[in-house]
Image 1 (cartoon, rainbow, N blue to C red):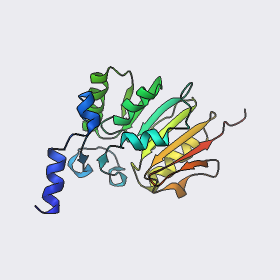
Image 2: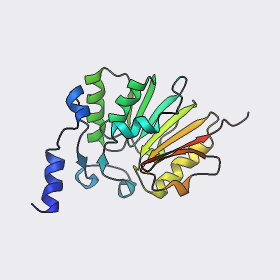
Image 3: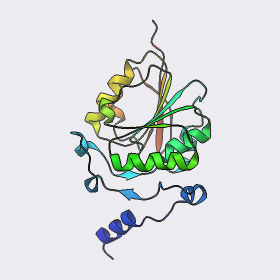
Image 4: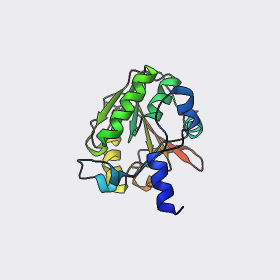
Length: 197
């Protein structure tokens, strides 16, 4: 079977990850953006959907505070990370996804697990971040141009911000106010301190 047919089979009939087998959810597989209807000028800057492994997420989050922080997943796809954030104890959880199709799947997965989290269907570059201490998660969801816009918004937040970036391809776009505090082969974590009033 050639590479194209293998990819198509995995997209249409993905093998179920153990995460989904245990929970009855649908977060497995890879979905190419060209197969999705997305009404955003930034569609070409996006990347295909593929969920972060629970192990990578847990390692990256091992030194991140939970209490009092809002958790935001930019490019939340089918919502696996939102579910894992709820399991970690985050109370205020928001996913941002510019594919209406993937956003619907994420909402369904949240409902299956009884997780009270919001999924905003929209472009991360246009998302208005809450005025809260935040943990922002990203699994290489978009290119450098969108990343610069997102990081510019986060740089002016009054409260502390942690950015957990899996597969960090565009870390050069981070403003100097973000200090890298942890790194592995698959992820890195930055912190921006609160801005004094």
